[in-house]
Amino acid sequence: MEDFKEYIEDYWDGNLHGDKLEAFVHEMDANKEFRELVMLHQQVRESLRNDLVHERQQGDLKETLTGLNHKYFNPRMTKPGKGFNLKAFIVLLIITLLVAFLVYFLWPSGASQLDRVFDMPIASLTLKGTNDEGLNSKAETAFNNGNYEEALDVLQELKLEHPMDAEVLFFEALSQLKTGNVQVAVDQLSSLSAGDSGLKYDAQWYLVLAYHQLGNEEAVNETLGSIPEDSPYYQKAEILLKDR
Image (cartoon, rainbow, N blue to C red; front, side, top):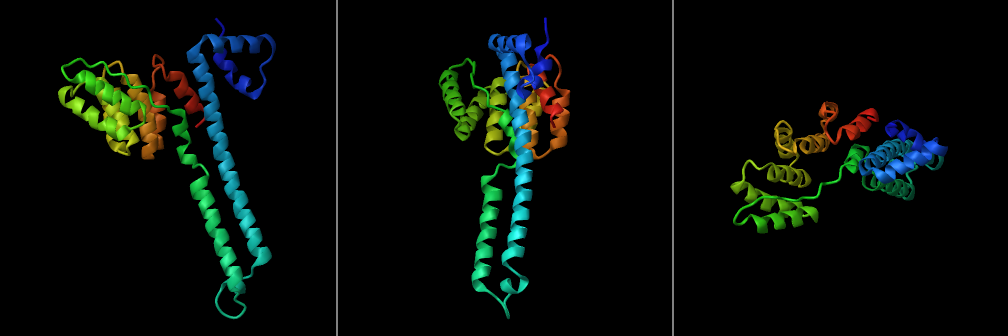
């Protein structure tokens, strides 16, 4: 069977033609996992491209401002004393504040690009108990609608009755992550990924995101590199590692 993964880069670069292109597209249509892998590869490429554009835009802005300063202003125009021009000083101040707003609030930060690769999973709890069904539904609805604080409250209530349940611990950890309790999420996901539950690979994958949000890029790379070949996230991890 042909390994289409080696053609992903050529596909996005427009270098795949004829029978190979037809076979590649057919494989994407027939294989959902492969299609997701191809799309992830492009997401990573776009993230890296955005980083480069962001850096280039910052450099262009710096050059533009320097040129404006040399062209329209001189040191005496913006310093109180002889030759001081209040109007020029105000104009320069406005330009500076506008640029600061654009750079820090409107442009995407390169540090957050990895977040785009990670979608939150769909919560589906299978706990069985007297009061579990109602709480299960409540936690699932809150989590899947992005109401992570509410989901966290319900999951912690479920945790009182099921302190070792991997599903509860996993979605609680993700809720902690999404509500800003990143270190708590790291600890919980680390414990789950080291265990034997059916969610250990999922926990390991989202641990990458948790370390990234914590700012520990060394741990991000280490965790990506430790994802085993039998993990459903192995191919995604390989692509992320290759492009970092």
